[in-house]
View 1: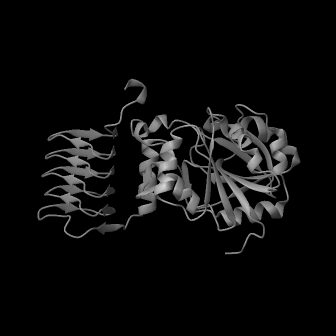
View 2 (view 1 turned 60 degrees about the horizontal axis):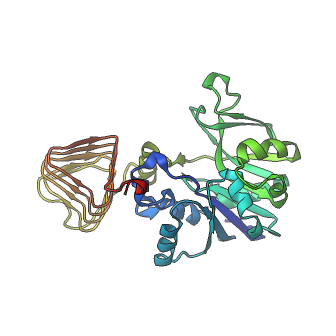
View 3 (view 1 turned 45 degrees about the vertical axis):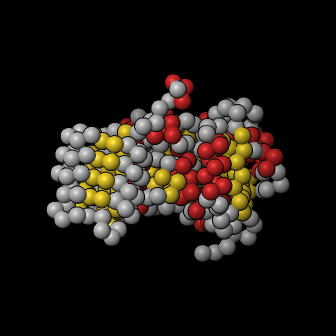
Length: 337
């Protein structure tokens, strides 16, 4: 990997309450939701090249929980949490940490709730070679209707934007994949308060030179149950099979892709394909678990069916229960306590 000459800082956007992942996000903020045993935000941070010497995270929800995690799990690079009194949007969150970006020149802004195969070092080199004010990562999507669409010319310069178009009206299948390389001058276009980078800032700087960087591999927005599960299956791959010793009893059926953590017990049950079973999970006789993730210390009784679901830590599923396309958690809305 070639080296980026100048160190850059990254702003990791983790705003929002994670409403589509409730009730799981009543217990932990979305950035700490685990994917293969590692918090979502750490997957993103660990994907950054060594030349990113500091990651700045504006936080408006459950900051203390994030501080506690970082204290117990010291990261290998500098992470700075900054208070965001209320959700400020993608642009407002960046403006809120402007003092930490002064004199930086080029900096990164990355959505903290998506996972991708983006080569960030290559992305930054591309941005510097083009010498524009901003570069956006682009992903080719079959269905563009939930996303912002970008149109580029033969030199990868962005010509226009289109927000959540109808499929038949879209002028491109390239969507905004949530990673931005920006020059410090872009901060001057931002006001304090709620600002959308995509709606309020990008149209203003389009004529100053904005470029799109397309990449292949995968891109997953992990903000809802379906896509969070997709992240597990994508990272696991179709051939994954890791089963800790003495976890599977006689009579159990396991099908890959499958990961079973230490201390788990699978007794005469059918598990997989596509299952992630965390440490100390117990799955009872004649139960079936498929396309699902079970967090630590979950208990599944006998004759249960768990499909396309997430079972949170410490949850007990009674005998004979069927769970389909749900997130099951003991956590409750703090406002109701």
